[in-house]
Image (cartoon, rainbow, N blue to C red; front, side, top):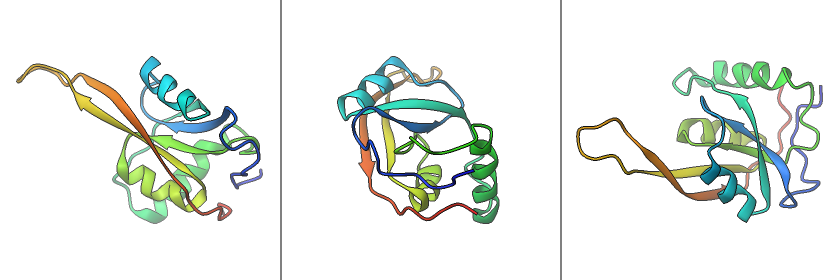
Length: 124
């Protein structure tokens, strides 16, 4: 498996690996498309595990897809996952606002996608 994100196709609708418990919403897709990305959902991971375990979990999650060739970075909502994936390439972090009335179940509305450049260290 090629374990590094390449910059080929960066911002020309190459997919970003989307790490989340849910599939991308229409809002998230639109925010990504507006910046030249598409999203490829790979599932979720526990953001609160120790750093060494998170790297192993990330590799396991991505191994299910065989290669990172063609992916231009990562995207997520959780800041801890974003911090860990910055070691392997650009990261898009979705900002959400809660639009639910007080006391009701959260109703996130995604309002922004912030892109940060990362390293291109191969995963081991």
